[in-house]
Length: 85
Image (cartoon, rainbow, N blue to C red):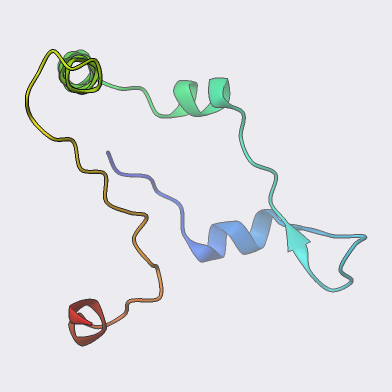
C-alpha cells in the first residue's frame, strides 16, 4: 500500500494551534475516512484474515507456536549502525 503523503502536504494543511502559537495541527482522519481512502484489495483482506486466525489459534493454545511481537520501531534510527546497536 502506498500513501502519497509528504511533509509539504502536511505543512499546507496545518492550521495554527491555540495551545502552541506558531505551530500547526493536522486533524487525524477517522477510521471510516481511512478505510474509504485506503481500500484493501480482496486478496489482502483474505491474507489479513488468515494471519489473524493464526494469531488467535496461538493465543488460544490451539497452535503450539510462540507468538513474538516486535516493535514499535524507532523513527530515530537513521543509519544501519544505529539499528545494529
